[in-house]
Image (cartoon, rainbow, N blue to C red):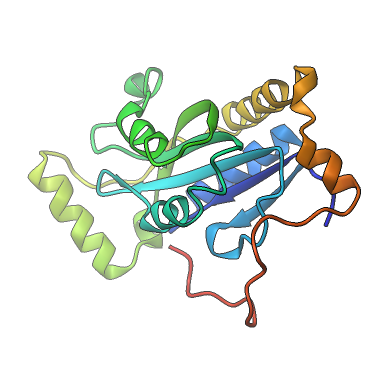
Length: 205
């Protein structure tokens, strides 16, 4: 395994969270990136976990992952981000969007050292939605007094800048070079048993 500083883990449905995860990884630079179903090792100094927000709730796959590896993540440096598109989002509201509730919910599921949290905005394109999702969202928007329409608030520069901040936070202190990183240079264990099987997963959500 490559001797990387960080691992970026994400779930995604229509691609927004995956895109943000890649931009964050670009900012960190010294990183691997994996869909949550494809994680085979947590042997990194920094674990970054990205969750999409659906129906005002975090990804069930991310929640299951945090529960399954709660003890393994307890001694890790962690960073958490979300990607969402609230019903009432406007360019003006986007400037101050914090997404604190879901971030705090995710933070409450882990025991590790969370060095930073960030809420990003995503995008919505009706033509990309399944017929069922399109109908469901139209109803939800209508009930809240809004009309479903295309929107794109993805911000590459912000995601890359946050990745760079994470790199600085994870490496600024001498103790950032953990025992695990030293062990990894000597071929230490991976920390998560490799899964058996062909590596296939169901369609990403």
